[in-house]
Length: 280
Image (tube, rainbow, N blue to C red; front, side):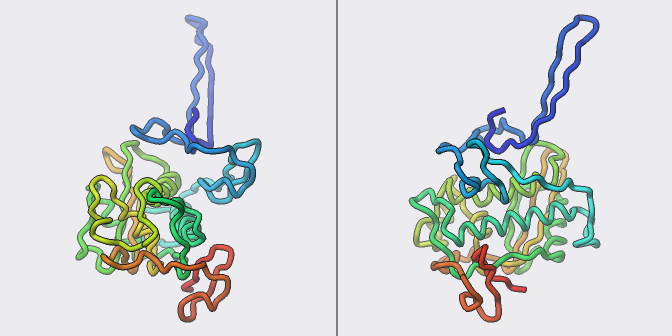
């Protein structure tokens, strides 16, 4: 009931004739009892929309963040019609959340557990959805095995994985939650102001940040994902091209995000409001 990411509730009641007992049942649109899960983030209540960062497009009302109303997932599959495992709504949600979070990183708005916020990014690319990358992610997710595919199975692509023991979770919900959890490795474990992926950073026991670093990798711009309803868990797989997570390389170039096209590599253009560079 008090879970910080809960945004929807539906209730019903019934008076049972045999005993005249009143039964009330409420269902919520988030599962709020994950073991070791955070119920809410500590801090002052919101005073403006800028304070509401959990869901893109949220506003602030009475100290609470109000999530933008989303279209329901009608099951349309027009973006990648040859791939049958995904819907347009879930594809759009993956892409929306990835670019929203990359934009926040680029603007220096994401906290780092090792101190301060992650540094700003000067050449962060805006992601586009790719049907071929999605097809590769679908192939791996359908195995229903929670482990990374081999590099030979996804040449040139990076990969992020997420699972929840909750069964048959809505695809759009899973897309948003898995994307956010990957990024949250930054504020849980930290990367540091050096912003470089090193062996020491990569091999910290119980403090993996590889999902975050792939998600924030500057030159990665192709995204394709799959959500699989496996027998014992709901599985989310995203693959990325070109792959990131190369040892002893910067996750991204540190500097102020672009404000015009001259701030982007080559012929790329600047999405000024996002601080990201458009590849197409």
